[in-house]
Image 1: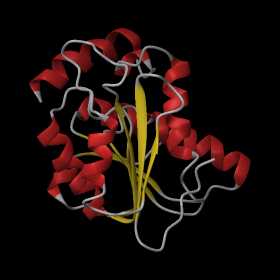
Image 2: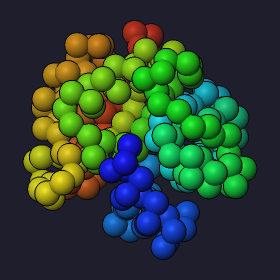
Image 3: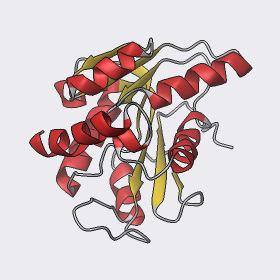
Image 4: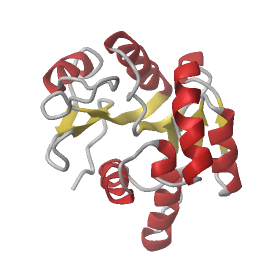
Length: 197
């Protein structure tokens, strides 16, 4: 928790509720990652955004709703209250919390940029908690060891992550075709289909 506060709060103070304020290199790469999540989500389903930050994903869902009639319920959780405050200032429902508390449920449980300062055991624990909290599926992204080597940042081997996710469900989609240093995983419950395009 202290590492997250020490890293994110100075960025938030300097850059505000922007991509740089949550550690992304640029608005463009943040949007590319978020679109991989929103493109896989069906309309009219509820979404829980784990590690929601200032609510960038929620804003994208609102924009998509204006275009496509999106009517799902969005909620976000973040362990940093300062981030939750920023999401709430944008009119999004968000609260302070950790998905491992097990008190949230949604059709889809998603996370973008959540694992930058994690370790393999923590990632497995969080993904398992996300899976237990979803009714239809889980979508998350992670830095990739296939192209990412920044000291102090966690990156996962996509093949290893795929193997782990397959212990929870055999319906798994891996996307590693949009940025060289990033991948997205979509995990589906038995009756669900991936909307990814």
